[in-house]
Length: 265
Image (cartoon, rainbow, N blue to C red; front, top):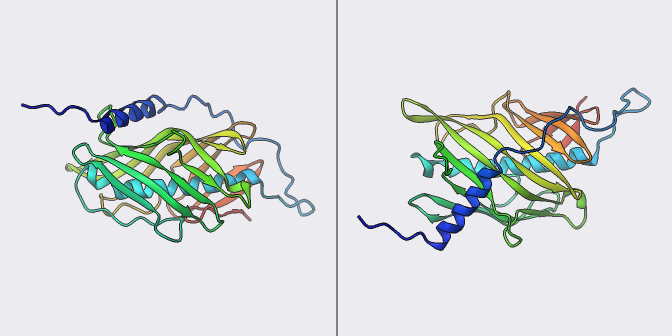
């Protein structure tokens, strides 16, 4: 039997996956709920929306896009057709390119993506089987300067951020051998307002078979956010396009399809 010499692409991808899995357990600890000082929400002093809440909504919405495109490619790690993913971007700009079909290794690229706020996104991530042989696959963003995922808004820096480290792990649940659900775990760490925020996915569950997975995470899943100089808070999924969280004592609604954040009545 002939063994293939590992290609440069293979070795590079393996190094990225090893680094991603080493970062699979976020060393940051969730140390409380709601972050810094509270807000008086009586009639004389209605709650004010914070810049941090708006920025967090944009990051979660981007994650939802990355997850949807990853789920659309999930069939290549098993067998089935895949749905066309919806997106926060008004035009199609995220592409997947198979680097090596035998593993498989797939590049996910953001190509001149611009959202409704005029924020420009670029960068790449790798979709590949986990090296620990988990039944599923891994989304591992690239962290070199040329390919790092970067969101830039020159008109309003509030919407600017970068992906700094981490990965997301997609684990298949099977029924009679067929995939019946996909769970998302691990974390992604972003640089927002020059401080680091970690977004850790807990019990995030998409139901359905490959090719007909739900559009949104099931109710009960959450993202725990630990943000330097801000504090800790939790984004709760509801099973629909709406999520909720509390930051600085103010309750927010998050539209996952747009990233729009509003104060809950």
